[in-house]
Length: 534
Image 1 (cartoon, one colour):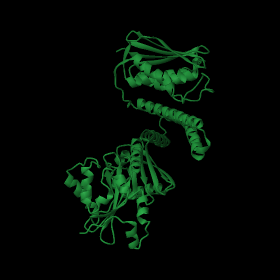
Image 2 (cartoon, rainbow, N blue to C red; image 1 turned 45 degrees about the vertical axis):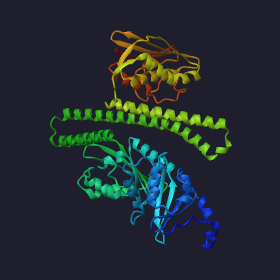
Image 3 (cartoon, rainbow, N blue to C red; image 1 turned 30 degrees about the vertical axis):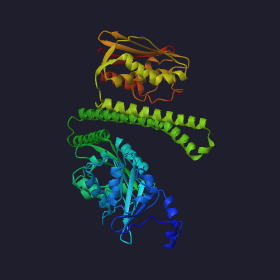
Image 4 (spheres, rainbow, N blue to C red; image 1 turned 135 degrees about the vertical axis):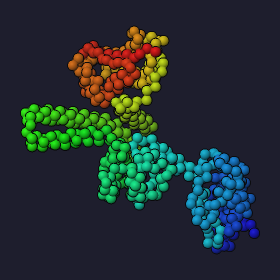
């Protein structure tokens, strides 16, 4: 067959095309290649040589077959090492130029780039292929998938036609699929019915009614529904419309709360059954009435206690989460809306405020997660022989900057250098960091925080003392409860949720130790941890 050279300006004019067409094609940031019916190259624009930098000039590529060009990619080391021999790799790549095989394909380059190839037939029976560098887009999508997969909740995103775009492993497993089993672009209803058919959800015997309720919640502008599994788990399902016309689905594990609510419901039903039985029999009326009154009182106290704890949690979370989030959103909004109105110093200052608010938010979430793991017996405790001095050095590094900002002296001179305990190193470091951070937070500017450690029988005694305002004796037991902040001038200290000391207590007891606090109003505060000596 004849070889057709690259279009020149004169040839373009002879063909009735604008002489500027080759110049326009060369200006594109997409590589364009044209092949004849025998799959031989008849044209490529200048950007092709930019993508494949080791290739000879495009003029010398004319006449090569598509397979020849793939072999050249391998020989010149342009592509990442194929997972098969060269012939098989060429055959697999060449399948894109076949009827019915027009899906875009990604080629991973040796230097880390990702090139997307789209191929279509031309009216003359040949082929046109577009080569685009999609590295940033693919990496962004992969990072998004990684972030979604790291979430403790189950996530799924749907397009405007309610077809699956993305989900994390947790979502797939809840619905009885492995991530590789899920077919992207499957509809929500299709996947839901498959999950129900596999027995993944309790439908109370009326499958169609249950599916209907689930679809109604999914299609609502902001739907919410609690679903249960045969394994006894319960999930709060929330569906929201997204700004691109699609939908987002989030499943949060609420098994513990569901069990408490179920237990309260059953207790209420049992109470009602007992009352009806008493009305019929009238046997031992006074004793039974007293029993029922006591039971009712206890149920009321339990509900009141649960409501109080829930109210405290919601009140604290709404404040502690909203404060850093307002800072992050506010300063980020300023930088986004009027970026050119700020000096470099102002940008650096706002970025620092955003970073600080983010750290406070991460600290709060970490404390809540650690307390939850401890209370449920799932904290990953790894006992080992740990040097107190080494853990203390790490903890001091985390708090030294905050102490310096308030001109607070950190004195750790009264510590035995060779004292070791049997503990989890990360947990011990967290204990020390929490106690030092707590002391720095509640100590006035120019104050002093002292850390000491010594052997006390079979235990090591670690004390963190400050000369701050102290705490009333009546409040000492309360500050060891989550979300309690009393004494120590909480009106001027608002950067904590009252979780530090309860977390220290939980971590110490988890490792076979003990924790107590001592204080003298106006004279200071001391926190003491005891852990087994190694």
